[in-house]
Every structure is written in C-alpha cells, then in structure tokens.
Image 1 (cartoon, rainbow, N blue to C red):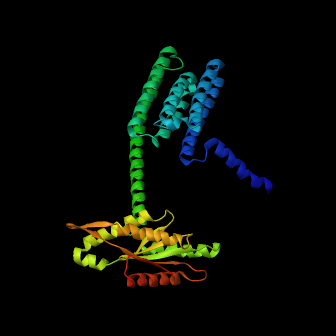
Image 2: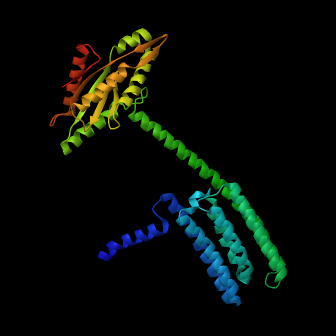
Image 3: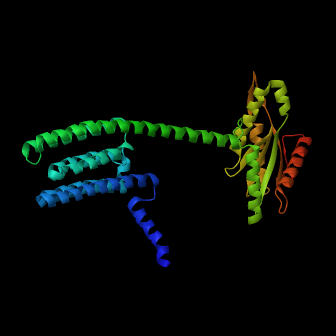
Length: 374
C-alpha cells in the first residue's frame, strides 16, 4: 500500500522534471519528445540495416549521434526556456527540417531497407500538420521532395547495384504523388484549426459579455442588484464565522425625478453615470458599489466599522457634490443622501438593510445631501 501511494508522487516529479508544469510549455516538450522517439525508431531501423548489410560502424555512429543529438538539443532548448524568445518557441520547423535531412542521409545508408524511411518521413510531415500553416507545410514538403530526390539521384549514380535507377525513379514518383497530398491535407487541417480557434475566441468573448450582463448594470457599469445581493449574503456568512463586521450604506441621488422631468432621461442617465464614476473613484479598493435600483445605490464596506466607514461615505458625498453634468447650455449640479449602518451580530441581512433604508429616509427628511448613521 505504501509503495502504491508513493508511486504517483514519483511519477509526478519525473513528469515535472521532463515536461514542466506549464501547460503550453508541456505541450511543446511532449512534441519534441515525440520527434526524438521517431528519430530513435529511425536509428533502430538503421542499426538493423547495418547488421543485415554489414555496413561500416563508424559512419553509422556519426549519423546516430548527429540525428539523436540534434533533436535532443532542440528538446533542451525548449526545456530551458531559451526558445521562448523565438517566433516559433516549439522549434517545429527546425526540428522537421533537421529530421528530414537526417532521414535523407539515412535513406542513402539503409540499402535494401531504405523503404522503411518513407513511413517515418510521412510521420514527420503529419507531426507538423497540427502546428504549421498550409504554406509552411507545403514548403517543407517541397524541401523533403527535393532533398530525397537529390539523394536518390546521387545513390543511383554512385551505387546503381544497390539503388537501381528505375527503382529510385519509382520511389521519387511515389513521393511526388504523396507529399503534395500531405500538404493539401495540412491545409485543410490548418483551416479547421484556425476556424476552431476563432470560434473559441468568439465563444470566450460572448461568455464574458454574458457574465458582465449577468453581474453588472448596463448603464453605470456597477454591479447589479442580484450580484450585490449575493455578495452581501456571503459577507454576512463570513462575519458569522469570523466574528468581524461590515458596514453598508444606501445612497440616493437627491431630486433625481426633477432632473428627468426638467432635462430629460438622457440627462438623467448622464447623472447616473457621473455619480457612478465619481463614487467609484472615492471609495476604497476593497469597497463594493452597486446600483440597487433607479437612482438608489448600495455601498458595501467589508471589515469596516464606524467612524472610518462614515469618513468613506462622506468622501463619496463630497465628490458627488462637486460633480457637474452638462444639461444643454447649463452645468447641472447634484447631491446624494445616505443612510449608513453597521451589521450587528445575530441580525439578518434584511434587518441591516431595513435600518439603512430608515436612515436614508431620515437623511432625506432632514434636508438631503447628508449622511445619517445608526
């Protein structure tokens, strides 16, 4: 049981060492590891070909070292983070170009088993389909076609017994038919990939807009009543657990109906937006302001008590008093009245809000443009 419990931790540490915990970097390293595995398969085939044909071990050793070493170097550049400074941090194109070159050299060394290089070549190209654009994949395919064509022509001229010209021509024609088809498929995959990326971006943007509409007031940009109600409920529960308290204020713009009647609803909307802007600038970063309904607003001051809370609401009142909103040829001034209270242990949120509402009514009846506490 103990061994079973420690195994995941050991494998997690190994995975972290090889591929890191960063999601994007992890994908790059897994792809680089896959390329290295493919090259290792090609090396194994070459070793078998050397054993069958009695090839010299020295050239094969050099080829093996360069083939595996080059892709291992790409892996290390990605793992170290050095490749992040490049336009292609995954080094997909350099790895493909290098692997194709090694494959072409291996083709010239494999003799009768050279046909085994073709599936690996196709795998290398398919490997790039999901990373590269169609144009890049086409250029790499043409590069592979030209490089293998030169290798075939050279080997047919140098060792016609092992590389008969007719056979090499057939191999080349097979690549001529296959590689462009791979490029066309890569183009389709690229278009699908980019279309999915655009759809994902549009969906994320739509979800963000829906989230904003669900939690914010469209006119003022402040939180709406529903979301503020949730935050207030959470604050009550938090205070019940911690024994701390909070203050809440109900604020109402004075004579707002008169503004709408005399200057129109457009000016009324401008007053609401202006109030929201200056009030947001006046409160602390930890305070939360929401539109409660019409010209009424709620200010939640977490971890706050009197008199600091009173100073905060007075600051809002002073900022609003200094606000000027254009209304035709005149600049319209406004003010705000507020009822401020502290949540008391054992009472419900409704009781706290009801007391704040009574205090707001008292501020209105005493002449407006003031804060009444209780």
